[in-house]
Image (tube, rainbow, N blue to C red):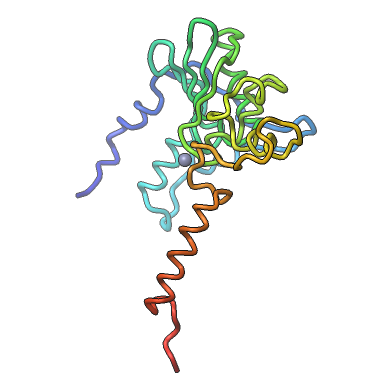
Length: 214
Ligand SMILES: [Zn+2]
């Protein structure tokens, strides 16, 4: 099947609901170090080199769009400020942030972009959809300073929060396993390693991993 590259529906879809954008889309640390810089992808406006697959080039053009997007009533998304998207759900008393990006700086910039357009609503909850770093790495940029440990439950606490707690003498979590349901397959979990070693043992027994004898 040949794709119809004159069909621009996907560009319309990717741009739908745009509320506001960062221009230029550059996020830095307080001391000026660049954490995120979409201007580095300006080459995507140019001609596609013959060595790049046309679909890959087009997908990159779609992904490079940044901004705050209205998904539907009360649900917004920050896109293009990191390798993942941050979703913001408006509630009666504040907002729920789903997947706060990779770094605190980009997450904070995304939340600031939201607040610039939707008001200074407090973050009342955070949800990590899964354990990849691009879904929880920026938590500190979204929560008020020091709020991580006090606001999250043991079950739902971030992995880093759990680790910190388990290492703090006197903490009621001191010595507890350094895992939570959100990181079921964390390398920190003994069962994870047990599975890895068991599969390696099986492979070794079956000769699968042995070099052919010479
Ligand atoms: Zn992921």
